[in-house]
Image 1 (tube, rainbow, N blue to C red):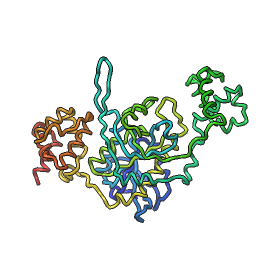
Image 2 (cartoon, rainbow, N blue to C red):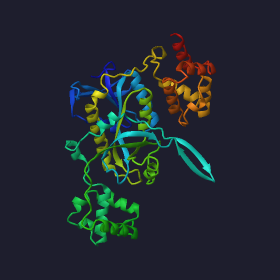
Image 3 (cartoon, one colour):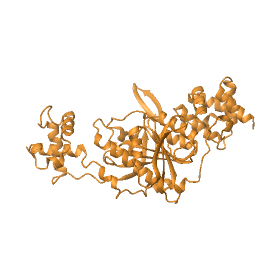
Image 4 (cartoon, rainbow, N blue to C red):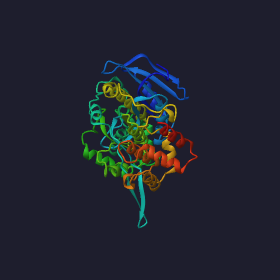
Length: 438
């Protein structure tokens, strides 16, 4: 199965190639010849494979990577590939930062809510900046969420590749040995309890818990050791077993190295467990185009400056394995359903769907909320109907969906109003002609 003409059930997007490579390592349920990599007619490298499913009909998955992290890039690649070859479902696999104390490194989070936590309005009052978030949520249906909650990987063979001890556990063990006046390196359990000594010692120096270029505890390090012994007098608790969580997943534009990110997010979304950089963009695309979206991300770090890189590959692997297991177990929810996406320009345009070329034109011509509201009024609507969404593309996706779902403003009125103001725009002219030809 390596042709653009093949019907695709799932388009599975990754942000980066190492995440894509982990998808290609999934073999459970593979049928046929396995993963086949090729270049599409549009020049993009993808891989296709078929998997068995609960419907006894194989599901066909196409996967690729977007080359760069971020909402814009992944949304653009998703749009490109969906327009080349329609799919019944969009999925995303990869890694994220997890909420310390609520998840463990290597765990997988299925997104039951997605939103852009950095979309909103920034104001200045009394010389201080205040951010007001436009918390527009994208949510899978209750049926999809229930299926997510049924995924169980407890006996999966790939779990054995999970690193045994996080660096933070090893740090705590070393601090306790130093506190007791012992040399960690000469301790009989050293090889078992601290297999990553160089990384651990470097982190202890960086934290200021051990004097630079020595193995002498600082006062702050001794305090951490005393608290550890007080809380766990017998021994350090073993790391928790691998878990799958179904919870809110927040999307932002920056790589997160901020200890305070989750406390801030929890003020408005108390159950949030993950932060990453792409999910809300793909979720918005799926909602506007009425294609179901499922996102699974593996926890590779806690969103702070001290990363534990030994978990990155496992987190990406775990997300890919769990996501494909879900897609196989939920095939009855999307097989047989296909959204018709425009493939050959405005002449073949499905009038219920806003293609990305038209989104980009409208967002460029009317990037501000007031500009968009003015156009909406000229098309026959009320300004109050237009939501206060700061990102132009997200705003226009919402407005288009409103125009196709019973609003006084219809798509033809909206396109005509914009075309009248920009008569030289070829994209608007094509869509206007497509409507007028009916």
